[in-house]
Image (tube, rainbow, N blue to C red):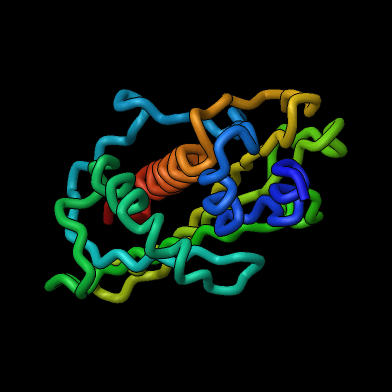
Length: 205
């Protein structure tokens, strides 16, 4: 089996992407640009930031993926830290017992549930050997004092072009490699979800 065939067989889910990234010249990765890569000036300033416990889980079609969770945990932690929405992020409950649960679910790009939730839509049926993976980030914030849960959700996608004749995906940014694409997607999707949380009037109460 040639390199391209091996890549296709492995698929485009995040765990497989990490395997493919070790095969030099096997694939070209792109991250969709529909979801904005937040800059410092785009982030909401939180006046009354509080500490929080962070729990992160990566899922593949709703099933926990421990290997990907461990790989992406530092990326997610950094994205939450850089948001400025919290004074401290811990693995154990802080004194105020606030909890931030973040899940990134890797789903098929053509799933109806994914497609309906995205504003501009994606390019389906990509020509040649280009495949796409969708990612849904769901953020659940349980505030101090037992207040109502706040939920936010964002969506993103990674495209992987396999072979020299594959088409270039539309509205997508080329990445140095597949592992970098996964890390960039995770940072971007979490940063946007936390920013939406910070915008919520209930968050600052």
